Length: 246
Image 1 (cartoon, one colour):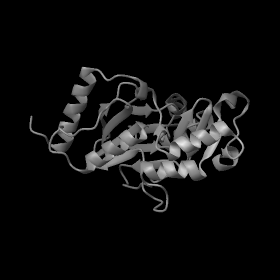
Image 2: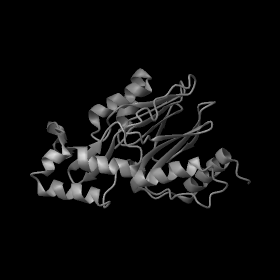
Image 3: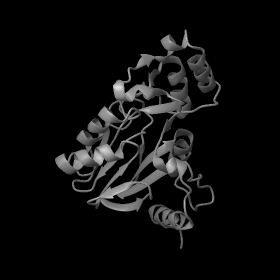
Image 4: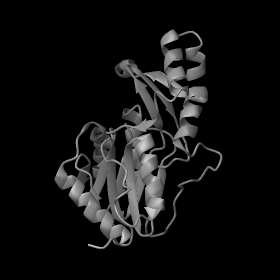
């Protein structure tokens, strides 16, 4: 329930900015956060989807410039893709992502995005299209252009920038929709307004505030176990990125 796109044709990344919590038929969410699904390390771009707290661990670990893999966070629960920004080459593609014509599409909006990209060859437009069909893809489209170096990552310094920030914001001023009514048109409401008169939603709100539920950018990889081969390829990729001794 997110949409990440790497356009290998022109060298650019586009992702949505929605973080969400799903409980049954209810989807609670917050858009336009400053907690981006992209992390840049020197000339390597990482794209993430999955469990928010785990993604946060990975982003902080990458920023620490690790000397080896001893402190590497777990991989189960997330999608990781790595791209060389100088050559636009895919350095690592997580197994559940879609690769198409040297491009990568990840998240629950991936199929909608790849169909749009195949017709229009525009990464940002592909994410905008996915927003129309995938309830957990939304908000401002974040982008990075490798050639021009232009981007809008971290563009709103007043927006939530950690998972704790996002969880608090979801619980206090987030939105909610009944995704069980998608076929007839799900209507978003302010969570605080609906929770005032609905015990089930009020309990979900309380569980988020208590840390029992946390924001995610759900994707298929969240529910899959990584194979030893996938873990080995990831370790080799990370070793090249950080210059670990072989």
